[in-house]
Length: 202
Image (tube, rainbow, N blue to C red; front, side, top):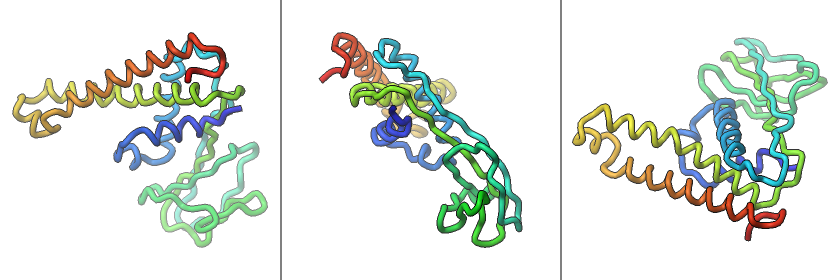
């Protein structure tokens, strides 16, 4: 078995994206899942079963002044609690805990919160490091795609001089180069993988 979180952590260690880091965790997880699905579609010759198992997400709300919530039957394993107004994550063991099938807060809530239950899922098979890195590299490819489109759209909407002021003189060229390099590296690694025995490429 290979936990999806391992792939996500490899991907996140390879990118530098301040805006992504500011996303609410539930939104970031949905984006990560989309990138991974895209990556799986690229890695068609993987010798392992890449069907994602156990992925799920649900949420409940708790209002101002409340401090307890009964855990739903058969709830997903991981719990995350985010303030609706502040966007702050409430920490388990500090702000809240689980006691006798109840989520209990240290004090009544001063803002409504979203209580999210989730599992990022897993692959049934044990992936090699090479297979995991190919999947993470495919995620980078799909993470770059909207950035390329955004810069290209911006260039078409404004004058050349304004474009240089808004995005930096070489931003589109840099994104294109990074996108092309990532695409070429990904395709090369997938081809190399296909010529190796199970266990990936060296």
